[in-house]
Amino acid sequence: MANIQVKSFITHKRGETDVDIQDSIAYDLESGCFALSDGVTNSFLPKILSDLLTSTYIDGKGKSIFPPPSMPECFMTERNHYMDSLDEDMRLMEEMVEEEFHVGAATFVGLTMNGDEFSWQILGDSCLFILPEDGRMRCFCSMTVKVSPQWQLDVQFDNHPRQIHSDGIVVGEWIKGKRNITSGWAILASDAISNWIIQQWNEGRDIITELWNLHDNEFFESFVEQEYQEHRLKSDDESVILIRIGQQEEIAEIPVVPDTPELSEKSESPEPSEPTELIESPEPSESCEPSESPVISESLVISDSSENSVSSEPIIEDDEFDYSGYSQ
Amino acid sequence: MANEPLFGDNRPYRKQWGSTHPGHIVFLVDLSGSMEDKIDYVIDALHQTCRSISAHCKSNSGPKNRVSVSIYGYNYHIVQLLKVDAIGLSKALLEAKKGGRPLFNKEEEAKPEFQTCMKMAFDKAKEDVEQWIAQQKAEGRTEIPSPIVINITDGEPYEGDDISKEEVFEKTRQAAMALMNVSTDDGNVRIFNVHHDPTISDPSLSFPTSQPTINENMAFLYQISSPMYEDLLDSAHTFGFTEATIGSHCMISNEKDVSRVVSFIEWGSSK
Image (cartoon, rainbow over all chains, first blue to last red):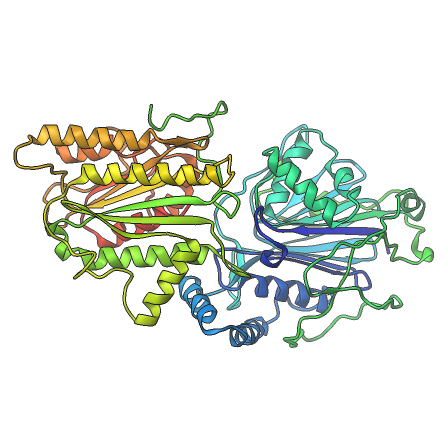
């Protein structure tokens, strides 16, 4: 299994606060699952849906059917629980929003690591970036991705909805793929910061190092504000998971990141546990209880040393880039 | 000149509406006597649009002031129907919901009567947006999204029997131009016009790219309607106005289909 280090950051729209964040990020180093969901502002209870999506993906360990058939029922359970907690005025306001939008909606990026193989499923304008050791950034999302001969990315962030709805309807088609990676980067990012990554990367800016060197979520918040003030980044919820993939000796060169950023309220540090073998779940998860999403962001090496003897020639099969719209 | 970008980069209307930089929409509603058979669905459309705006301003912690809304009715005088921020809008909608009534009462404050004195409506809108911009500056905002004004009418401007039609058109046009010339660093105020008359025999026209010659009222509306910019083009297509193109003027005239009137109002306030 590849050695990885992970950092993640999340912040709110400009002028708003942490409680207004509608993105959700979660990962479980033990099972090698990473998930990011961007709750659609113009929908009903998007935060409940985005949390539900990331937690069920992590619970399924990348092996279960996703989203599970029970998701609409789970959403309604959470919806009823939330509505019951409101006073009359707030409940009526929420009912007006429900009458307006009918359903919650969210985008999704899920990434599962199994040995050196990374597999993903994506819906919407949240993106997965993969930067192998060849230095050529790949971008996977539901939009059309074009790559110039100079390997610059061009992604059209249009307004066509590609979302998972809280009633189980999937608008658009899942983008799925897999790839062996033994060193490099995988980055999950919500739409605005994905757009920023593409633009800045194309201009030659080493944004991965910049993000990776951010000390904690407070530094990320300051970083986002500065980019916004400089008109490089749109005001939106900004969430990103950075996964550094490399050999043990490479990992050792990376400075240890001391602090863990605060994430959503559901994120709690997991109890340390021994790596466990992945077992394919025959049935999708039926639980409506969100899992305690593990956190995140200290430098961690999750493989044992016996698996470090990976070939120096990594398996990279570009024909595994099986998403529509890709061109070069 | 109205609608010319003020930025060096020629990219007006890029400022997002949000809590940091709230947007502002002004609705001007013709309350002349001829609107009597149309006022029900105009009120419904405004109510639905306000619900949509309010829903878009909802966050996990309650309504956010991402936009403010002014609604003025006009006939021989101006009636302020609503002037609220997003939180005030949520409260107004809540009161209406509790009372089982629409936002406005067609027998009282929104009663159609008298003539279509459109010039004073544009004058009022100018006063409103100037006041709003001053308020944004007073609150320390340096980047202020350009306001949008949506005028809903079924007729032609009128200023009195002793003034010629040509003179009325010109005076009203000048008032609309003065409104369009109000600007922020995001661009000039934009005016979108919806003219609805199911009885008229002339053909309907929407988002024209050149001044129409069908009748003088259409030509007038074209002159006082702002051109389409890219910020609202995709949503225009989503709302069914596939004929809209960059530079086409944001108006519909002689529209007979009520659903398109409603869609236009919702589109115009969807930024």
